[in-house]
Length: 304
Image 1: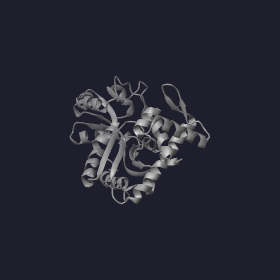
Image 2 (image 1 turned 90 degrees about the vertical axis):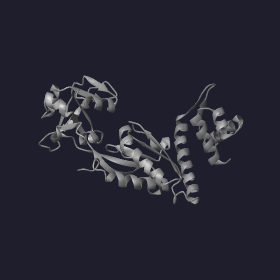
Image 3 (image 1 turned 60 degrees about the vertical axis):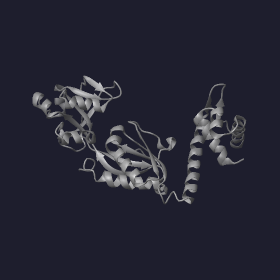
Image 4 (image 1 turned 30 degrees about the vertical axis):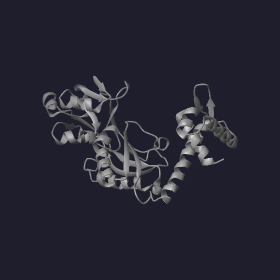
């Protein structure tokens, strides 16, 4: 049995969650797909899939084996691509993920320049405000904001951002400027949150020395949309907290101003992460080169 071909069949069955759908996708008969999976389970000595009349689900062993199959098949593809020159010339599809606002403001323009520079390339930019497992999802590159957990991913630091508290100048003219974090109790707060959990905003003390101040403002208005909250703040309804890059264009044009800057929390890093390390194909390395050059020269991300 061709073990690599059997792995491809298994991956497709797992992704399609069915033998018939996998058979259609692979241009094989359902019987051949079933036979291949049965032979694979015999060789491995473990049940990989649980079959019912309606669904196919993976066992715990099957879930681990799926991840191994994807890794091995990706390695095989890289070997074949290297022989064909893909490591010397960018070609194919590049998949990138980033936080929604950061992707819209800073990654999308780079993707456009990249595609102009490399006509043989195609790109897929997926924007999520959640951490995506780029290995399991088959994504080439991701932007991460915040301190990274230990992992096998390669990371390149491209800048830093911090939380800032903002409001419209007209609002502060009307209500006054908060001088210390405790003054937020006297202001109307718009909070961007995806849950009803209590808000905890952290600030530094003026004395420094690693001491923190934690404030739980009473946000009468909560939304999961940065754009909606920012529009309301620009219109003078109240104040909000957002990441510095999200506020930067509106601070520059005078629509917003920051307050409590002396108490601003420590910045957090922004990284590009990818799974291949120094063995990354040309399509990844060339995009990283362009992105690093562009983002590291951006004063919004590297002003300190």
